Amino acid sequence: MNIAIVYSSMSGNTEEVASLVETTHRHRGDQVSRFEADRIGPREASALASFDLVYFGSYTWADGVLPDEMKDTFRLILKELNVPIRQAAVFGTGDKMFVHFCRAVDEMAYHLSRYGVPLAGELLKIEQSPRNQPFNVRHWAERMAHHVEEGVHHYVDSKNQTIVAQTS
Ligand SMILES: Cc1cc2nc3c(=O)[nH]c(=O)nc-3n(C[C@H](O)[C@H](O)[C@H](O)COP(=O)(O)O)c2cc1C
Image (tube, rainbow, N blue to C red; front, side, top):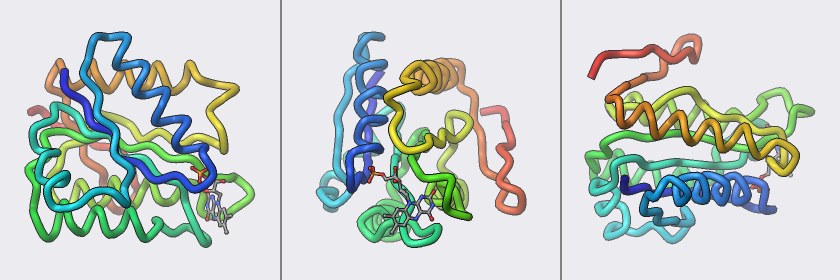
């Protein structure tokens, strides 16, 4: 399987999750390409159409906000280029002391669903660093891979953020 990971990380927590996702897929024998969100230009964005599964990962900023570099990436991929991403999976890190815990994850999933990009499964929200619970990330990434292999598609319901499974 051919995997892309697009992520944004300020202080390293989300990057750690990206690394765990990467090693999980490499252990499965998958090919993995990693992209920092602020390095995604039109060429990289268009190339995302060739992957079996594209992960999007971000921290949450300023009281529940998706960081600018990720917003720009989503605008480019979904709105400007309408890149036909086959399937996506969304993760993020945040801090439960904020009211809108990991809201960036919900926002990314919402945009993807709105533009018709199927999600491989449930959203992953990690409190700060995944260091003390790497198995959670590994099991999640394995589940995403199985869902892609089995053709399971999910979409976010914008009203209550639940994930609605649909047959592919
Ligand atoms: C100014 C500021 C605002 C933040 N706002 C939120 C927030 O609204 N919700 C949340 O879950 N986390 C919030 N966080 C916490 C970060 O998202 C969290 O520390 C995250 O793990 C950082 O990821 P990174 O290490 O990949 O940059 C905020 C952090 C800072 C410094």
